[in-house]
Amino acid sequence: MIVSERIHEHAAEHFINDRMLRRANVPRPVGGLPHAIATVIYALQQQGHSPVTIGLLATGAGIAMLLGALLAPLLVSRVRAGTIIIAGLLVSTVGVFGLIPVHAPIWLAVVLGAVVFFIPAVNAALMGYFMVATPSPMLGRANSAAAVLGMGAMPLAPLVAGVGLSFVGREATLIIGAALCAVSVILAVSTRPLRALPAESAWLAHAAQF
Image (cartoon, rainbow, N blue to C red):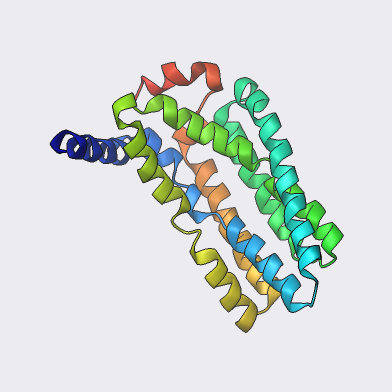
């Protein structure tokens, strides 16, 4: 038990103290993507669309993510991780802005598909490097710390979407989500260690510098 607690403490310290890992994970909790998706779904419910229509919309987004996941290994092996992360966040941000004037479910499905298509590649690049850069005995605990940082804001998405739709309407609520996504892009672009992340083959050598 004592050994386990010490590993847990060292893992958390490793994640907090490693400036490369800390800075690379900075944009994760700021993204407004879950907020935007929740807003779109709740707005469709308010407009009286059937559960089948909303379910098909969500299925379309899921298929787009699946296709993106199939492409992710190829991108991670050939393109710099920093480029993938910044480009993926940028595409999502533009897509969320694109959701604002769109109301028809079929076009919402198309735009949402574009929004989420590169998310698997972003996660593969960010978490793949994280796995390489973290010592094996600390990997589980450090991964938990990163997950808290990355998903800590997700439970707030339905709340923010619901409150926004109730008080300021669909468009303004989506603008808030798009603005949060834009903040993620700005943080990613302004974080030099993240921009410098190489392609997969150079992760180990890059991580050894920190």
